[in-house]
Length: 86
Image (cartoon, rainbow, N blue to C red):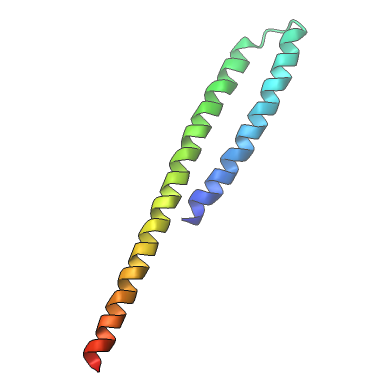
């Protein structure tokens, strides 16, 4: 579960880095340098990272929900066991 959260944080950093690169490429384009391919690649990578971040966020939520449900089920079993022992 923690690995998904760490991955989300890493993807946020990657996306921020790519946004800065995109600004740098835009400035270079204004200066007349050929950077269209770099801009297109950066945008494609940003989309990929956002989709991956979404996947890891959903996986984290699913794991949390599963752990929560298992904990509730275990607590109910423990209560039933105590009642039977009395």
